[in-house]
Length: 165
Image 1 (cartoon, rainbow, N blue to C red):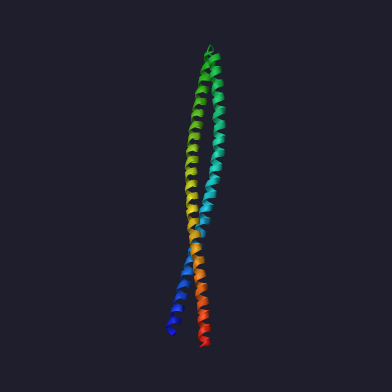
Image 2: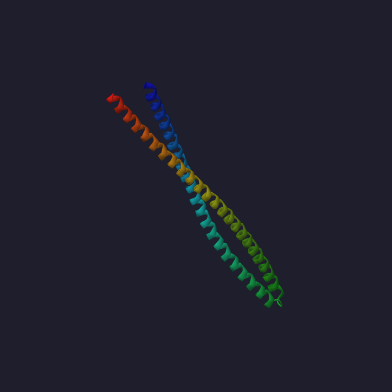
């Protein structure tokens, strides 16, 4: 009888240890999920910021293209006036350089936006995987708690049996 009692105690201790380990793992995974969700939120904010910057740069490019067109029109109209033409040509060249720079900035911003989108997708997949893992650990923890309760009941029943003997 003492051997049976020792086995039950051993099994209870083993189940308790497994339940504690499962709870620790669930806590770790929840912390990891929270960290990844925070990172994901930061990436989404960065995407929003880059999209806004992208819109501003697109507006700047349109403005510079209009100025460039106006400058070309003025340059064509003023071709008979040598000095005015040279001034307009210099202005035209400056506007073209500004337009190229704005276009370059726009391409860089679009690339950053694309990279951030990719990272955000990666973090979303990571969060989903961790949430799934956490759910599995929670299910295991619940199963262990149920087994622990069953063993407790067996032990109580065993004590009652011993008491009746």
